[in-house]
Image (cartoon, rainbow, N blue to C red; front, side):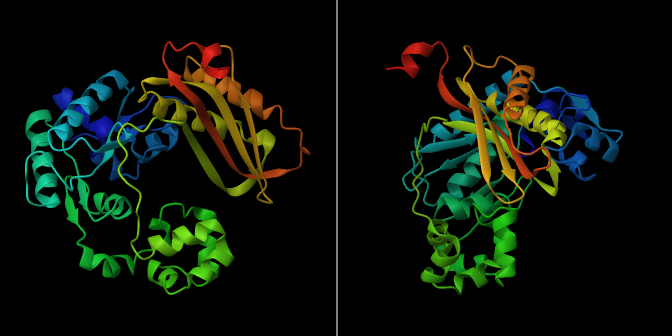
Length: 344
């Protein structure tokens, strides 16, 4: 879906159409949940601090998120999907994989299925969606972003190698800033340069992930579309441009907690465990977790617990950190007995 939360707001309030809309709670500790394409022209992006977004686009209209309406719109989109296939793997409220190898409407190609779905979403829900059509999930994910907004991009099997070769390695799933920098230093800036390496070389350099790199650089992804996959965890993390002291991480933890909390509102299940992740300047990873007697009931409570977990880190006060993350895990159906679920 294109700028989903902001698009729902613009659809439901005609006065917002054509205006830069930012879906976020206002305030120093808030982050952007979504930005309309009018706001994106000013550089506003999801997960950005709301105060930064306001500086970039002073005329932006800030709307507090309404996840009840967003979930309702998401369910309506899913009903359209179900008219074509039962093999639907949701990634979030606004994104999903569909396997249409066989489809209910008997359309001859996946491209025709995607075009029909996009047309139904536009006509029935007055929203727009972009689609990527490809032989596997990895390629379809890249293709779905290729012609946003309101676009359709198709990667035919015979086109895979030519399509992937010039892409920056950062487009490969799992290649974050650290791995991208390591690849760059090894002379691999483009996917084609990764493909030129042998499996043995990549395994030596990247361990188990080397196998995945080898396959994705060749457009190989055998992972199936898995319907109704239960959420195990939700998290947000940030790698800093400069390493920071633990005492300086509170603003980052607050922003990440708000981002994680917003993401968790798309779930019907309840998370019981809060996790804080830290990575030192020397790349050592620390995690601290807490399972309170009752699940966090608000963003403020999640933030409080995450900050209390930070206080349990007993390293040298001069130790610096390059990354922090806040997560929710141990998901259960709402109303499920906590004691029984934790101690079967």
